[in-house]
Structures are given as C-alpha cells and as structure tokens.
Length: 169
Image 1 (cartoon, rainbow, N blue to C red):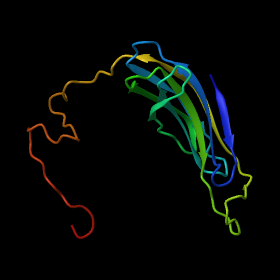
Image 2 (image 1 turned 180 degrees about the vertical axis):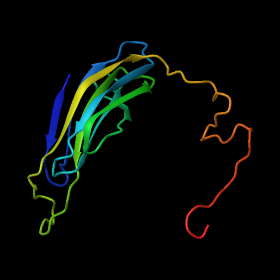
Image 3 (image 1 turned 30 degrees about the horizontal axis):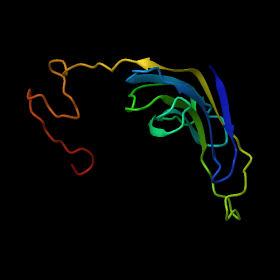
Image 4 (image 1 turned 90 degrees about the horizontal axis):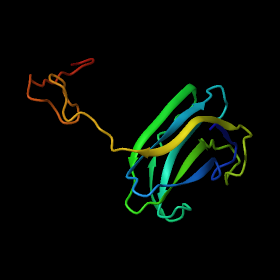
C-alpha cells in the first residue's frame, strides 16, 4: 500500500505516526518488513521519515515487548528502499508496523514555549509496504580467501601498517 504523511506542528508535537496491528502466526521466529520512502528535498521544513516495528505480547497489539528497525531518511529526491529481517522476541503474538515522520523544530524568537507553528509542513511518502514471516538470515560462514573482515581485523595474510596523512605527516 501507499500513504502520504504530513506534519507541521510546533515543539513537542512535531512527530506524526500511523500504525497497523498485524497478528503473528504461531511459531514465527523471524519477520521481514520494509517498503520505500521518499522525502522531497524541495520542502522548506527539514525532518526524517522512517518505518519500524514494535512487537507485542497480544494479537491486538497490546503489551509492548520491544521495538526494531527505524533507519530513516531525510530530504532525499528519490525512493529509498528500507528492508530488515528481525528476530521475533519470545512471547510475541503481534507486531505494530509503524510509519513515522518527525519535523525538525526550529526555535523562533519570542516563542518561549514552542507553541508557534511556522506553517511549514514536512511531507514524506511511503510505498510498497510489507511485513511477512521470514527465515533466519543466512550469511557467509567466513570471508572469502584474501578478503579482510573490517570488524575482526586481518585474516593473517599480509601485514597491517599505519600511515599518517595530511599536512605535517
């Protein structure tokens, strides 16, 4: 499905979200969710749009068990694809699939309480939305020969060196 979200509220009310409650089939251990997001850059207001999930202990989506996802985008003139595979927390029976926009509040002279609405809306578009059961993600057991895993250091082939760069190096 598709949806357009818009907000122009002042401080403390600058976010707007919509959610759909989705009961999880019994025995589902992983879910995959996502969609496409577009935040036009030609708008005066800055902000962020994101989609995420909240697992719940009941099929009516009551009983919060944890949130997942939420990588958003800001003012980008193209459709950005967001997809995630997440483990379902033990005891979860439902998930709220949430679309959210958050307008960056800009303080204005004389607005001591954040009540002034600047009248500049922040708009985001969402499309091709989905949430479905998934299997455990599979990845390579280890890096292919000659490839270094950045996070775990070197695989023992070659040597590491440190080089200073820039002026005065």
